[in-house]
Image (tube, rainbow, N blue to C red; front, top):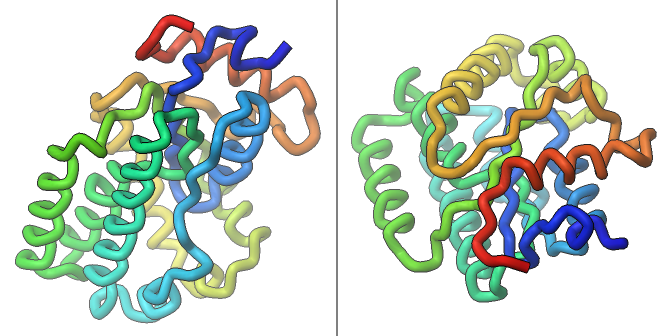
Length: 220
């Protein structure tokens, strides 16, 4: 039996995966999409024209990077809305404004005017009909050492050159953000408690937890 039907996951659900860099969002997105026969929505990293520049100079490129991500994620929101749901989404639009843009504003690597412009645009976007909240947000969490180890193992050059203090700051801000997040139901998963790559039963256990967390839009 399909796991979506077995656990009564609505076929029009949108499930969003959140968590800091290197925590395994893409792996989780692919595993859940396969298990539930859902579509995927990934952030556009490989074709991002600002990412390398940003890691080399936060102050110069933080606003450009965040506007790019905001635009790309809003287009994905629109696509998911028009298709009628049934998506696993890699990273939420809430993280952009609640963590990344705010961090750069707080640290002075994004000007006050740029941050106000960014948040004004975000606030306008979430008022449109293309912006339904996810049915559940899965938050992937873990110890900083485990996450930094995964980043190093992944081997992206721009991430390898990033100071450890940046990942420490990001880790702390994510914890603060999720502890105050109320836009939709949240399922917290520790990355040490499952192994999607080597344990065939792990994904079903996660689907069962989703079923206990999710608030269905429709009865299926």
